[in-house]
Length: 343
Ligand SMILES: NC(=O)c1ccc[n+]([C@@H]2O[C@H](COP(=O)([O-])OP(=O)(O)OC[C@H]3O[C@@H](n4cnc5c(N)ncnc54)[C@H](OP(=O)(O)O)[C@@H]3O)[C@@H](O)[C@H]2O)c1
Image 1 (cartoon, rainbow, N blue to C red):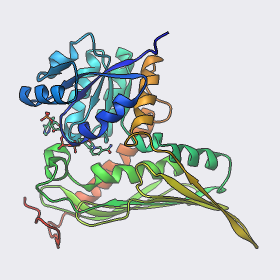
Image 2 (cartoon, rainbow, N blue to C red; image 1 turned 30 degrees about the horizontal axis):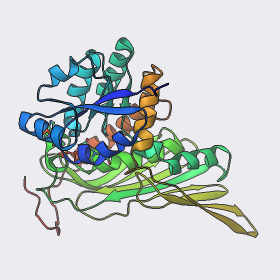
Image 3 (cartoon, rainbow, N blue to C red; image 1 turned 90 degrees about the vertical axis):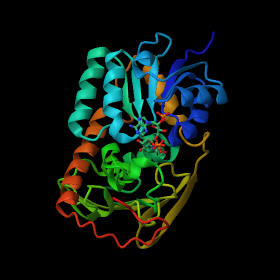
């Protein structure tokens, strides 16, 4: 009997669409049936180059296509809510690039709509589906590091201001926090829960685009997360999790760690160290697309590995961080990168 498949459409013909297309095609439960672009020329070209049967330059027409089951949004953050709400209302399952929306309220509205229309809504937080993070969760749940008490995570690199618009255009969600900080906060909250207090020190241009910040989250049991992110400076893309009886040190990159080192402390004996390595499927997005497909085929409206409660909780933290960043706006960037940031 043929394997049931989800018929996917991709929206956006930019960077992430190109990076994920191959992985979507590698999924045994997925079929890429349509591409949608704002320009009919791009849609036609992308469809021809990648052997995609149908192309659209009108999003409403895509949403009306009965041969499409699910829509993957590979567009800048600031556009996700409008596309996702229209698609869900039309009865399409939606997997949207991170962050799902720019506010927690928008995410709550997508959750409400998905329940009303009985379709999946999910943020493409591929990090949480990577085999290394899944294994680390399993070890932590089995007590392999005792009580998790610290997460250290960072992610940053200099992005020229003439690079992808999503980094530097305020209306599209520009800034380090929503693009990169989202991973560090998602990792911290995955292992430590909902923070009790949030404090951030950082730098933000006059137009509201944040480019460098350090975030400290504290938790009711005394746990602490120290997170740094930037779109102007290099920060190693790494995650570390320390507990009362051990630690897990993830290899780079944070969003899809290929390995980690588990240390079990048992003083006065020397610590026991074990290395774990993981096979990468495609470019690393396969486990997430496969999982989204399984949930869709099972008629789920959310995925248990990355439910909307987790997405909303991270967005709530980002909103608080964002408010603190805006209050510290300095527009005083000591830029040393290849292209000076322009307003
Ligand atoms: N998971 C990951 O590893 C990863 C990596 C990079 C980015 N991302 C996420 O993917 C999303 C897109 O990132 P990207 O680097 O692909 O961005 P991008 O290249 O700047 O934009 C992607 C595409 O979105 C379409 N688009 C639709 N509405 C748009 C608008 N109002 N303005 C500009 N473009 C619009 C454009 O395609 P058309 O011209 O065809 O309409 C554009 O090429 C972001 O949310 C980002 O956080 C995820």
